[in-house]
Image (cartoon, rainbow, N blue to C red):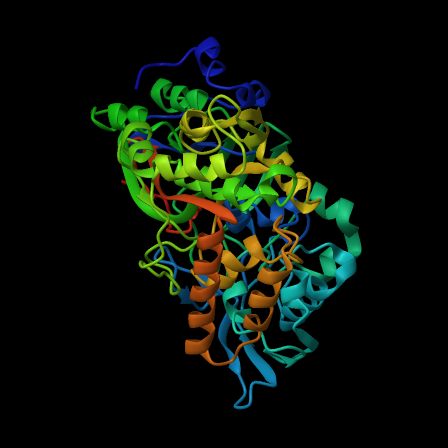
Length: 509
């Protein structure tokens, strides 16, 4: 690698401007400080509250510092983490969890079952602002005794242990948090994870130091700097110039170009993220003809082939082929002529188009904005005129939580536990803070499935829900993503099917 001047080093992204103490990457074979150009900012250090807690992309940063109750392996299967055993009693009125012993927090204090019990109780408390509180509140009377934690089942939730390795499923330090409070924790967060926070510059970077006492073994890289580079072109510049060792989520043509050389390697694999368009039940989207026309006018496969270089799997429900409720018989065909007929029935045409706004990120996922541009072009041909509004991903969460999204909004939905409740369920159940479709008919279909104890009946019910949604175009699923990761040859990257980029899984090649 050629020597990098200060001017060149600062060129890759705005985030680099804050790295006043940062010296550029060393030769790949002797990396002391691993540098990652990340595609999203970190707005908060508490992984259990606020909009960032349900951002799938941020989880890779959280999992570097904090441990979840249960470990999720790269193939998405669960494994012992801070909990080594877990389950229900015979009649499923209680849960029992065995807590790993010999673990310490980053400040050296011992991790105990009290931390687990407190974290579960706090997550269930509506006052804390956990966006998944309605899941955690299905457990009550959480108690620690020795290295065991027990809880009563207030409402049977078949996915409760899956949530323990999903969004907001993190264990925080009871004594430390109560001592320093939310502001103190934000200023100096500690966990039990593989890395400790060394320095954090908001909107710029976080520098992590390896936890020498990590129960899972000390990571290969002593220091990791994660630079927040939200612009895709800037991330490409970071890796191509040598300013970063690893980056992700770049345009696929750039991925193919760079990985074909000797200086940069590439890793790509399907992940649990899907691209989809939320439909908000406002304005013209109350017209089923408009919704179905919008769905049938999108040529998903051509978009994948032309914009994503073939990296992607077209889908017609919020399930990917790997999910347990996937039903290949559910289909929404590409049929622009039928779309025109539907619009004509509601008085619209290319000469008199229906008009609405569609919101999207730009550079958060490969070709997100360009995909929306292509969709808007396809819509125009059938009689839909959509205005594009670009926003940051944090704004999407804010608007979605307030049920104020535009009539259409492009989004990347993550479901790394592959359960229908965490895809169709939360995206489409009106009372959920993650849904913007409030139709009573769908609420009545989904409601009974939350606590269904018969697993076969539960999955069959979710397939019925997916068919109803597809038949009425209540959401527009587009594709399952393939995640592109570029890295220097001196780093071996293990991709995680959740889409989380985890530095502790990176090894020296």
